[in-house]
Amino acid sequence: MSLHGLLDAVVKDAALAEAIRAAADGNRMHVDLVGPPAARPFAVAALARDTGRPVLAVTATGREAEDLAAALRSLLPAEGIVEYPSWETLPHERLSPRSDTVGRRLAVLRRLT
Image (cartoon, rainbow, N blue to C red; front, side, top):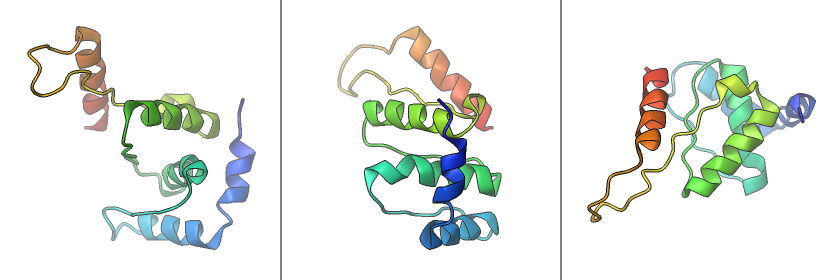
């Protein structure tokens, strides 16, 4: 389901509009925003859409990243959303991640360059 129209209503918030202006002017390399979890997809989508710059959203867990990516796909064109998959193994384990995970990670990095 597309929620593109809802994004237009959310960006009218003064604080979010100021963050978008700060990111769009090109003088700031990053913008830190603090807000409720439900507002995160809207803030990320607004920054991506209105600044025309790539946006990197960092989450605490892989599940949060999946949820954020799914929410962003309802606000922005799906082809513009990519998720950097977690490594799946702990640093002290003698296991390698699955080859498809390594391939997906490389594809995201290649796309960022």
